[in-house]
Length: 304
Ligand SMILES: CC(C)C(=O)/C=C/C(C(=O)O)=C(/O)C(=O)O
Ligand SMILES: [Fe+2]
Image (cartoon, rainbow, N blue to C red; front, side, top):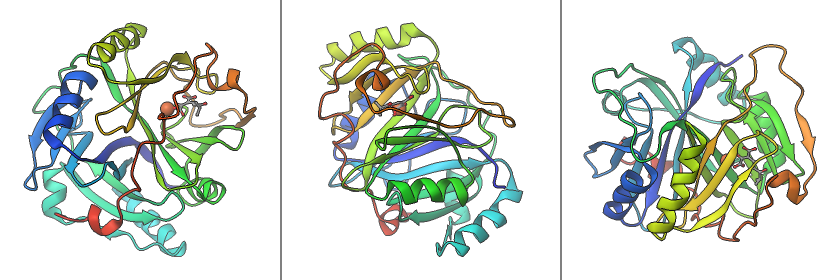
């Protein structure tokens, strides 16, 4: 039984690094940490060393999604499960782990979601206290993958990686917990014609963070593409917006939490407008669709 801490880091490709750095600091509310040797920008939204890495690239999309393991003893069983599933995980060199304040990390290309996935053990980084910015973000919440192989991906993340299904909305999207992390979902798997990033979520502290974000995004002319609304699945209040490259980002407030044991059964929810947003807002077609294909493993390993 592989045990995790959380969805803790995401690396994104962006087409204009300076513009995106300003946007993620000033509009999204992430804290700048440092610039890496390849020019990549490291940012944080909790007490970890960093949670988001921005890389300059020709097109914008998902480069790596990272999941923190509970402890060192998870690595070998995980590696064995991946190997049995025909996936060869690559060890991240110690120098990069040290830069990322990780004790150890593995990366693998997971073909069912068509993305590079990292499994890592974070080192405590208490030297620099985290200062919330314009939004009182508590943590990176979840990442959702667009994939044409959704049914296979759900089975793989559930049966091989030991994530737990919380709910599915029709055949559109299935939400899984990063077990035993309590939050309703740390990943979502969405049916789509291509492999790409659906969205990245940041969980905020109070409803005012959603209201202030709406005003801030409008002032910055950053497109709000869905919400504010409430997701019946996880019970969270949400707001989706587009970053400067058109990548979909989400703030959400409040989310169902599950116990480690005796959790409720997953639900199959109907695919109907009131099950997408209980408040009835309309989704802009740019929402969830603006990312280029996910980066391949070779690109994600550059600099590693
Ligand atoms: C995909 C639709 C809009 C949906 O039902 C989304 C639900 C949730 C949730 O219940 O929290 C999400 O976080 C999401 O996919 O963004
Ligand atoms: Fe979401």
